[in-house]
Length: 412
Length: 151
Image 1 (cartoon, rainbow over the protein chains, first blue to last red):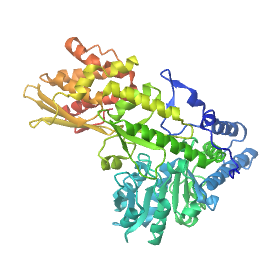
Image 2 (image 1 turned 180 degrees about the horizontal axis):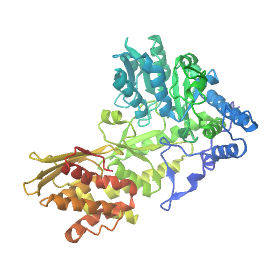
Image 3 (image 1 turned 120 degrees about the vertical axis):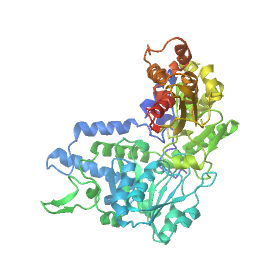
Image 4 (image 1 turned 135 degrees about the vertical axis):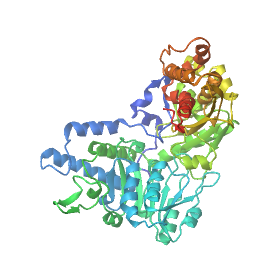
């Protein structure tokens, strides 16, 4: 008997939900392998945003009129949807931000900056995206924090032991990517959190990639902060979310000042609203929040284990095919990795390669992927990256490989 | 094959990128500059020796990059070597027009013939910066600046 209530995942049927995938570029059918940069949006997300904007839209938490109440209801319902998606205990532990970057900066400025004395340490890994590096560099520059870097293995794997070893008596935070946007490496987050917790050190995970491919449970992870962004989760741009433990959020001073985040303002004093409003100064991305909730509902209606298996199957197939080319080298072969494949091709610069693939309709990312310390670690200036999403198929992998052969013919 | 791709990656360009001319540091450089393409992380260094009469008596470059940036840098060194700084500046202006799809009217004769191979770049707007990086870097070196962003 099938214990899953949901039917198995059908990627070909799912493609029908993403109108853009049926277009062509340069006369070739689009093969979109750049979802790790930004995912395409299903019709359900766009419809939800349009419907909301055309029937229930107004500013939130302000007016007393009908639409304001309706919009506030939808906005807060979106928060509840995010809470469910990440498995948090309370909806007030979810702060809406304009994206993952803002969420990390919020933690850096509001949580960590006041706790940093010169010489205090922040532990991070070489596989971080710049968005989980630069905010900590700010604390180095401005507050004298010391960045302690944890290396990955030559296969790109991250060991919890290595993170543990970097945590010392002056460590104030561990900042770590749940999934690398270049290597695909999935960090052993639960173990890292447990090790850090044993030493009394909080952990923030950058889940911009991880949230897309992994099933989240904040309560089980027992993590302090977790960051996600809407546009990689098949949702709109301009919205992300920070999960923070209630006690942490309550202890934090606001980052932006403005409307909606105060309790009372006088000429001489201010007092702040409770979280999450305290961190949502100004008019928030309301329509985007509704769109994000629709994206999470869309994912929630699928069997996410089947989606993950599908993406893993594509990754395995692409890995086998690219390994067969004796002129390409895959960077990142961690045992636990998500559907991201970075590689170097002999005698072909990533940008030349990506230009030729583009003319074959294949969209890949080429460059340093906002992960320069990682590029340095692997001794490359740039790589070509194919990333797989729920709507990709085996045929996409075949087209990629054929296009690679073509590039080799032109440039090799 | 796509005609514009054939145009972009024609044999002359591939040859320059595989066997760049005037590659390496110049020990007695009077001017040097470093250019950086933040899009891909590529870097290029341009060295010039300008003599007392304002002539570029020697020039070289080094760095790693895509075929377009390497070929463009290599062609540039071929063209500006032995010429007055003023001419190199004019040539740069014309080259920038050429790769952005302009008619580059100032480009004539042998210069036109040799640089026309780069005109195909204009069909690839995302790659224009690759082609212009070395030229911007040369200009910034001549102006006494230290870095350029290929913009």
